Image (tube, rainbow, N blue to C red):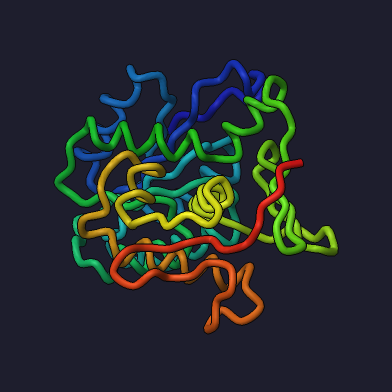
Length: 250
């Protein structure tokens, strides 16, 4: 199993992807396709191998199959969210919306079902990496520092971090951060589900409508005083959502 050169500066390394799938034909195909696209790709066939690679290798993104034999892919998603800070794309043959929704609830950044177009997978990987903390740190030297302040919170758009009124970091997944940033950049404007999906992922909502609602719910639990009575992120029936608070750019 390939291991990244730990002495190579991060700015000169290609993004390192870890494909976790017990089907070696699929993981091999993904590796052969993504390698020439500018990525370093490692593979793992189980949760145990996944954890070993993360211990010994710098990984920028995990492509995780839910259907690993004898293991619960959703539990592995939970493990990654709790023990690793990088983005996760679930790649699975399970097309049911409940799996997609639960995966996003547990902290996954995107979800693609098998069979998939390799070009779509590439687009999803690039999109998630653009939104990841690693990409933000690579761009930090040339990006001017900017803070979006609202209701006692401060979002540092360079560090990709949100802080409460006491200066304590609010833990956000990459998807939650980008979703909140989108609303902060468009305050007091109704955004439909299609607006949100197009701006964040480059495609219409379609069957992902419920996934957007799930992410909104997760975000409310982190920034609203009472998430059951949201005062900041309000739903507009039959349309979408609006962020009602005044936002200051500092």
